[in-house]
Structures are given as C-alpha cells and as structure tokens.
Image (cartoon, helix red, strand yellow):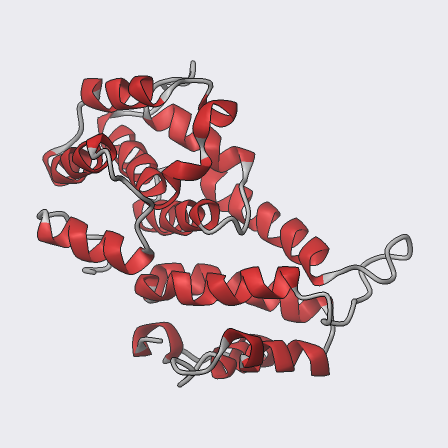
Amino acid sequence: MTEEALDLYDDDPILEAIRVSFRSTNTVAITNHPFLNLFRENPKTEIICGLSNFLFEASRFGPRDIDTILHVVRHAKADESLPTAYWTSDRPAATFAELFNADFRDRMRANIEEGPSNRTEFLAASLLSGRCMGLDVLSCSSSVAAISDGLKLSDYFGWNDETASTCVAGACLQLLGGYSDLGTSYLCDPPEQVLGALKRLTVSGEDELLLKFTIATLENPQRRDLSSKEILAETSIAGWKFWNGE
C-alpha cells in the first residue's frame, strides 16, 4: 500500500494496529493477511469498527489503496474460519460479515447523507462506495440514492450550482467503480436512460472533464468497473483531479 494511507498516527491504538497490519503486505496472500490474524487474536467489534474507520481514512488520504483493503474485507466476510464476536445480548456470537455490514453501512449512510456541501468528504465516500459495489462488498441504499440525485432521476433538486456539480462528480465516481452492480433493480432505469441522464447534465468547468470521461467509459461496449487506481489514473489523464491532488 502507498505511504499516504499508512503514515498517519493518532492516539487510537486499534486504528493504529489496523494500519500496521496493512503495512508492507503487497506480496502477502489475502488468506494470510496480517489483518485476519489481528482479528483472530482479538475477535471484538472494536476491531471491525476500526476497519471501517480505516477504509474512510484511506479514501481520503490514500484512495488508490481502496481496492487493496476491500479485497481483504471481502475475503474476511466469506471466511467461515474467523471467530465470531459479541455484538449484543441478542447476538452474542455475530459473524464478521454481520458486524462489518451493520457498522460500515451506517457509516457510509452518514457520509453520503451529509451531502456534497463538503466536497472532499463526499467525493472520497463516493469513490469508496462505488468500489464497494463493484467488488460486491456492500451496497447502500443511500449511495444509490445519491447517484439518482446526481443524475436528476429523483425528485430532489435542492443543491445550488456548485454543490450540484459535486453531486454529479460523486455519481460519476460511483458509476465508474460500481456500474455493473447497479442495474434496473437499483436505479429503475435501463443503461440507456442512465447515459441519457448523464448527457443532459450541466456541471462546473472543474467537473466537466470527469463527466465526459464517465459518459465515454459507459458508452464503451467492453465497459467494466474500474479499480480505484484506474479511476484516479485515468480521470487524471483525462484532465480531472481528485480532491487531494490524486
């Protein structure tokens, strides 16, 4: 993983332990990933909540590494050998997947529903959300609603011009990373209408290049979901910069 996502430190020992588990692990097989060992040794909800925090931290400070972390999460959710952890008195032995889905979905909903007024947070959460959908880690109804709002397929048009452009940019990032997971069951529109909605949108000059790149990508018959690294690299080549200069 890149140094940007890992060279942070605060007084949270759990978050720091998770950061350490992802340092210098580029050649480590996912099945032997240090994070899995960390959870096996400390099967607590605090570890899973810390993983959620780490994902949002990475989306802001090391967004190229989102996929690396999500591949570990996807494996952990399917790994039946991982121990259960206490959740509540009604769920004293919850699985990793149950705990992660509940915690991460709540955090994603909070970040997305805060809206595009905070551009940096909104774009980071949008990129993370798109890759979560693309890698089949988790889909959140609030994230899909944000796409509908950005494409003006919903009845909500409350943003001014600047925040509306950020809302469109967030929708583009989600579509680039997780378009294959949307389909008619989410947006209630065939792909042609999604493209039509994108082509009708007007954005700021800052986001026009991202919008054009998204349209061109979705029009490609061989389209596929792009990884976090590909999104950042290819949108940069197209002339658009992610908020932190990526």
